[in-house]
View 1 (cartoon, rainbow, N blue to C red):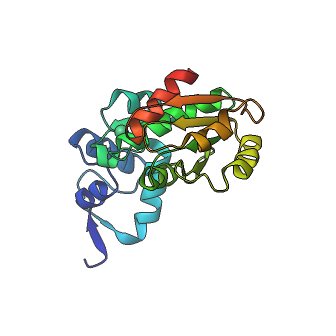
View 2 (tube, rainbow, N blue to C red):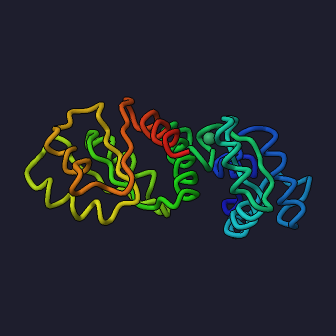
Length: 210
Ligand SMILES: [Zn+2]
């Protein structure tokens, strides 16, 4: 018995944490012969196969409308099941992650893969970088309070970027932002954002691009 785990616990841990999602996931496992309708436990040796089958058959998403829209675009042949925000594959319960996912798809449609953010706090930058990890959208960040190497850096960043976001809501020196907006070095595409917080800022930028 020590090698067994309760199916209910397993499916909750895997993010199928609402009753309908749990029932659908269980039916999938039964359909694939990994358990049957009478069993309440499953042997741990089956876990890798269970995860593989669930990932191949189902797409977990929370009830947020934007997450649902993203899920429909991403799910392919997988069936969508509604779970709590924490188990959502799109947002994981984080508003900023949801907005970045949606913006990332929109940016790709417009040929934008490399984004420079000028301004914002270190915490904002870390949050964006964390959510963007492993994605095709890349970010670089410029501290808007340090003019030191700004000009030299800007030339390289402007060459690299498909989009430059000037985030004016946080302390931002004109001597820094001017290196991105001045005529001589002007970036291909510049968008201004003034909203506070990553989610609001990225949504504002997305509206400019759409
Ligand atoms: Zn979600």
